[in-house]
Amino acid sequence: MDIRKTTDSGTLSAAITGRIDTTTAPALEAELKNSYDGCEALVLDFADVEYISSAGLRVLLSAQKVMTQKGGMKLINVSGDIMEIFEVTGFSDILTIE
Amino acid sequence: MKELELEALNDNLPQVLALVDEVLEAAHCPGKIQFQIDIAVEEIFVNIAHYAYKPDVGTATVRVEVMGEPPAVDITFIDSGVPYDPLAKADPDVTLSAEQRQIGGLGIFMVKKTMDDIKYEYIDGHNILTLKKGLVVE
Picture 1 (cartoon, each protein chain N blue to C red):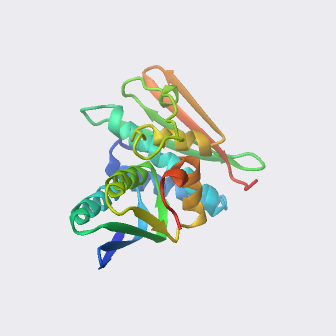
Picture 2 (picture 1 turned 90 degrees about the vertical axis):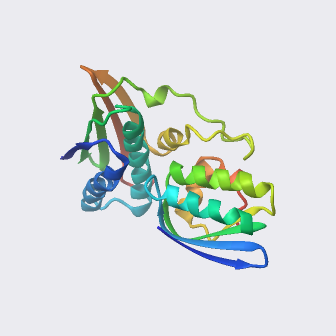
Picture 3 (picture 1 turned 30 degrees about the horizontal axis):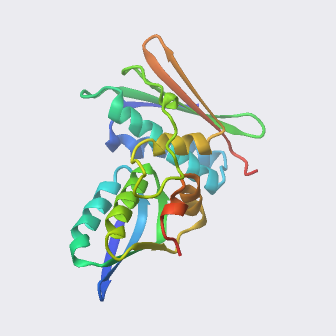
């Protein structure tokens, strides 16, 4: 997994590439935690995310909880397979997905 | 049938998935189904790694077999840790808001939702959990 971050007037965009699984989710969580202070809103670009397990869902849920207190969080470019995981787990209702 | 015995550690997950993917690819499993099976395998294996032998480390056996027409895969996980039936756990409420959501239980819930059948048995000191999934898109 790889994360590419860019900031534009308070909005942090993080483009994630690869797999978000048990072995990679802690790195994503750490990367996001380091970023919260400097940003008002968070955009996660899922275009190149190939896979997400419950370990990744946990990271998204905690990020959502933090960003709700700030300017919000949204996911963009979510693929069909990943979207299905969000639907099965009810995450499609609690995340903002564009 | 392919089988692998290894230490039940998160770090060994890639080896388990490599075995499963090798069998699924040889059986021409559609990508979408392989994706769901990989997630289920991760959830079950990581569960064993976290709970079976805590705080020690023990071994797990993973067995993968494709059978039948139309083909279906059976994936069996065997460990000799503490008796633990992951299916006995209550499902999380997936209708709650982000603030009310609990972090646990999602993994097993995803497995239940995406696999065709899950069977748990405790026999002679072994937890035996078998996942079944058809390899044809409905």
